[in-house]
Length: 212
Image (cartoon, rainbow, N blue to C red; front, side, top):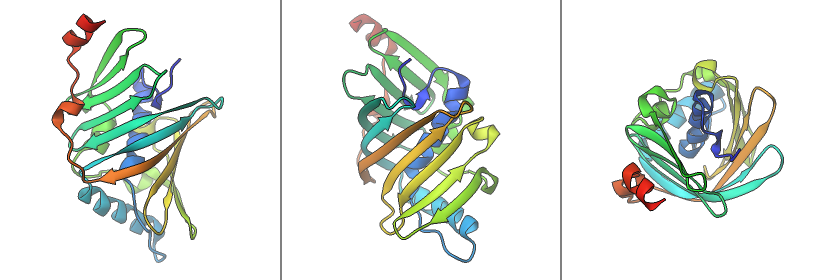
């Protein structure tokens, strides 16, 4: 099975994991010492509102040490795209209405209504993650680590997020599923508030079939 940044991305359970991946792409905050949980959540909301678009590169490590890489782009509300480098055949796109997964090797095209996935939560204009989803927050001189877990949002997965404390640079997220298997994704060369065309988040299914 080919893994995506959201694991397999072919079942409703995996779509819950998708939310965790996108959380990482929009988080950057420096939590205060007085009330670290509340301050962190507030900082995330404030930063989220200031970054409607972003793009960068990612490097993914699977449970068995397998590696893959590619690029991502986000344009809120509703739009995201993950492109894997060869030999991976996967593209993952949300056009604002549906989440689409294209496998160019198997010549498959799967679509899920965005409104029925946790991706909608994280691709909205406002970040609406409740404080109860935050299981732990720790801050060091170099890294801020946030651990998230909420069955309604993430299913049985636990998500550990890491980003640089001083510069707010995104570093890594790790998804641990119900079986204890972990998939880690590091992001780098991230650019915020970039100009992204809506065409980047569109896939013509009929055209795709004709080409294949």
